[in-house]
Length: 183
Image (tube, rainbow, N blue to C red; front, side, top):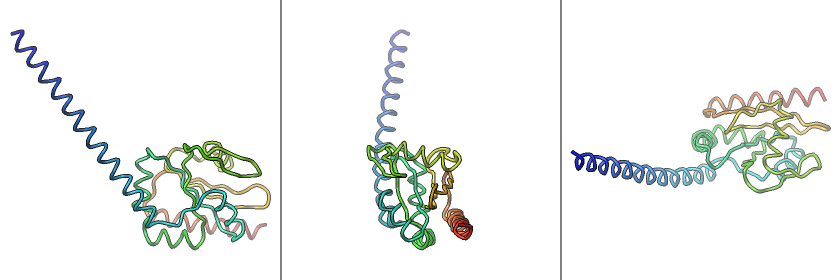
């Protein structure tokens, strides 16, 4: 009886170890696939810019800065890259009216805004405060309408499908046009 319990315990241990090894292999494989999908989405999506250059271009060209707040570990961010940002109708709308930025606040970079230097996390927090605290998690899209004085910031948190996202983009353009008429 004791031998049967030891054999059963050994079998269960080996089964668990085998399952863990299988899951780890799957996760690594999925990570590689996700990384290659992100690279493919980046190649087929909008022409992403760095924050400093994008903000300056938006001011000059009177466009809206579209900031895709993402992290490397965010699964829905990768889905949005692949299924939303890679769509032709989304790319067309972005290139017409926006200056797109990909911003990972977890990276060790500094950004200039409002005459100050910010880390990615600090810039995210500043934009969130200007956008009435709309940040709820990743992915989040931040729209910055450069203004003389304090910028107008609007935040949309969460994954959006391409058609939904195009509607949001159009609403942002309409809102920015209304702002410019009132100033």
